[in-house]
Image 1: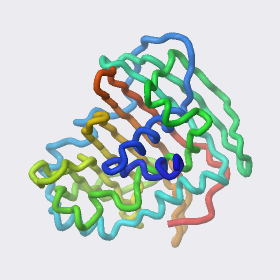
Image 2: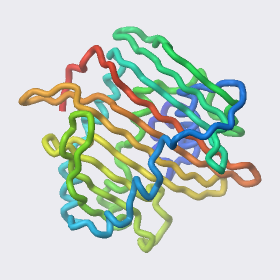
Image 3: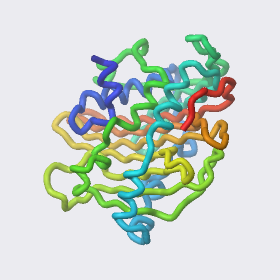
Amino acid sequence: MRRALLWRWTRAAVCPAGLLVASVAALLLGGCGGGGTGERVAPLHDPLGAAFPSRAFEQASGTRAEALAALDSMQRGALRRAFEQLRGAGYRRHVRTEQRAADGAVVAFKERTVHHRPGRSEPRVVRSDSAGTFDFGTLGSFVSASGAAPAQDLAQQILSEEPSFLSRRNRYAFAYRLLPDTSLPGGIGTARVVAVRARPDAGGDPQAVRRARLYLDAGTRQLVALRLHRRRHSMLFDEDTRQFVRLRRAAATDSVTTWVPAETRFATRLDMPLRPGRRFRTTATYDAFRQAPPTGA
């Protein structure tokens, strides 16, 4: 049951418990430490206005029809395979997880670098640092440290089988624009950019996904980067979450392009009645791949 909820955490609009489980499990990937802290560090995540600039959306020359045409031609296989293939690959993963106070001060953090070796289930921790004590409150009852999902599973959850803004029957509830092409790092080169935002005048219950930005490799039409902003209000809790995932090109031939993860980011704010709000962030970067996955785009 827990694993099924984790796999569908982007469907939190209909399964709030799934979001709670996934949120805590994501943070436990970084672990918890002891000690004390009050440090302020450079932000790990772009401010909301920088990640989803309103002016770029409003001034976009690409029409709704062009944006939907790009989404209809989009391929999602590279994103799924990139993380699935971590199971057999050798690579290095650097993870930093933080809990922050309302003013942005770091209450606790855990940071470590882990080497995953080809064909071995247990990774090797080569560097670890932590300070402070994480406070999950009642969220901690949903998952334990031993139940944390592996990176190859957790990162997959950033894109469900059919996010609401991709479903044809829900398109009336969103505005779509095709933004100017951009260049992404990691050997991706030119990417087409589709911006999505929920329409407040669409009627019915507010959409959980408020904004999204999808980056499609111009050559293969594969989804190679994605930003999501999710907001939900309920009787149990209010949730505001931002997610980001980016791939990079590991190898390419005339007919096959191999993609691997480059970075993932997760930031959430959870507010519950009569309890202090909790804010968590985790960022993971992936490099030093020693075994290129055999499948491609």
